[in-house]
Length: 310
Image 1: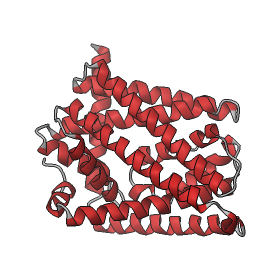
Image 2: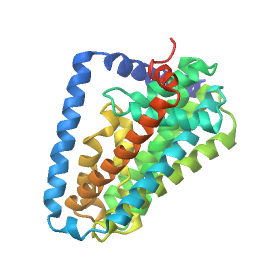
Image 3: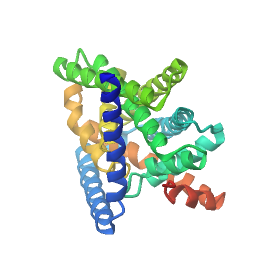
Image 4: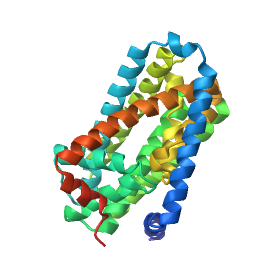
């Protein structure tokens, strides 16, 4: 009984936090402030990144950089779609792969706005799919906690030979997040072990692809980096997801990569340069996808952005 009460309390706290973020994001002044802060932050780190590279930019293998970042971004986007499909199943709403891909892409595009765009888009889709807002928010929070937990746990384990303290702390926090994710989904009523296994598998693939992408991008830029170091840098993505307020983590993710890089044995300049260039390529691809969506089913895009039914 005590454990159930504890789980319920944590679920209520998470749902309350989601509501606060959504309501706070509606302030026009706050929207402008966050957008300006994120844009300025990204501009600053971009200038620092390109200045740190100097002549190395001209010697870079841009074919490898663009292919690694582009293909990696598309694979990650597809995995995000499968992740959303599992969120739907956890909340009692069933979506096809095509519907999941569309919702995920719209959510990623909405993340470029100074609002928790992906959360709003997903909750809107789940509510129109026949589930309640509360259940959808809890399922989304649970799966999101799995992403953060799996990323931190894997990054911590592979970084054990680079920085023992970083490895231990990261892995420990990751394990706690995974336990919280399991508890939250149990609270929603998810009793299927298969769903938990599928979600964890998706998050593992996301971590590996994210680590491989940044590794190949940095290799193409002429930096010496191993796959385990690249996986270690995915911690920045997990922290950005946990914060969830900056538009797409713009500026924040790049700054975190620069801060984490020395902890896994890479120079801050290298990590920053790779993160900035990877961001630019991903934003270009996302812009193309957004344009395609605007011409193909634009009314559905507006429905998704409109916010979930209360």
